[in-house]
Length: 342
Ligand code: KG4
Ligand code: ZN
Picture 1 (cartoon, rainbow, N blue to C red):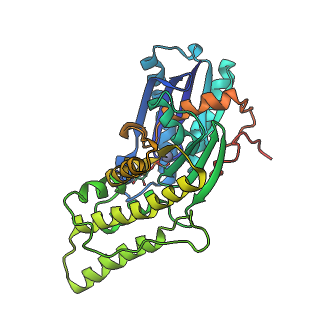
Picture 2 (cartoon, helix red, strand yellow):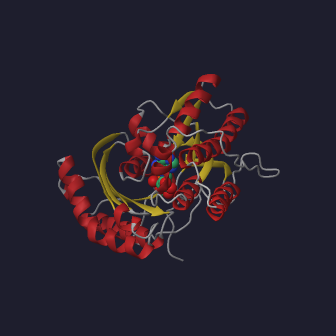
Picture 3 (cartoon, rainbow, N blue to C red):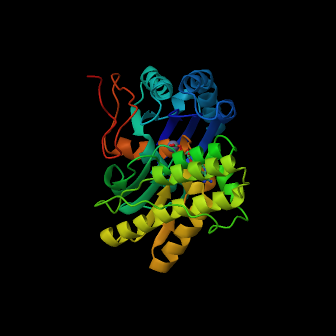
């Protein structure tokens, strides 16, 4: 089954054709990142307009690369939640209209389910159940994937997501948007013990995260140094920050491994590209003797291939959208996004 998938939840307009949830026939990503970098972060209204300009071109490119006409696809999928609502509405309405015009099923997909499904494209033998650490720009979650469309949230962030913290710290250190990859590169050669940064714990919720204290500590450190006219060792501060994020995420994943006795552990989301996190997860998996699945860097960030992968399993579960399908700025990973306008 060939699914044409569309993703537009944030600042990438993406389209892909995926076969049977596992094989990439095409994967086109049109990034708006340079436009938003001018403003230091994503400007939602600009994102929506850019999606409108790009969505037809990107979709046609994905079909062309897959060697298909519009009639050659078996279904159309689109990210319907969560994300920037104006941005989501472009891809969701375009995908829905295309599906109904072609007389094909429409499959609404949850963006974070898609991030997890990126791993199905890379690892043909990966099957639920497995434990997942999701670390993206908007979400940090520990999720038990019980089945392809059945998710149990074990823990989550109480404030900022890991990626959000990376982006804010990058701003303070003057390297701009998007922060994650820049901080990762900046940390090379830095001393990860030079600055003392806090690792927060949430009282009575050992699997929950909090990044706001860490973010504030970096902001204060930079401002205090600025006021005193002291030079910051940016490489070391970036390294200390990466280490603190890893020290927040990885022990909670280890605890979740203990609680679930998981043997298969998956990482997903933009922050899964972080070299410190990948190294720490690899070490944890080796120590525990569990199998670790890390998506390739090309599938960590937003793309439509991951949406097409998850869409296949949503289709098999009967989770189809009607003409009344809406998009939603927020939705838990455990909720269905096949919801009608009330
Ligand atoms: O999953 P994603 O592409 O979008 C959301 O669904 O939110 O994640 C984007 C986030 C951004 O905050 C970006 O700074 C972060 O992932 N990111 C990284 C790295 N590459 C991207 N964070 C840390 N290290 C990286 N190498
Ligand atoms: Zn994402």
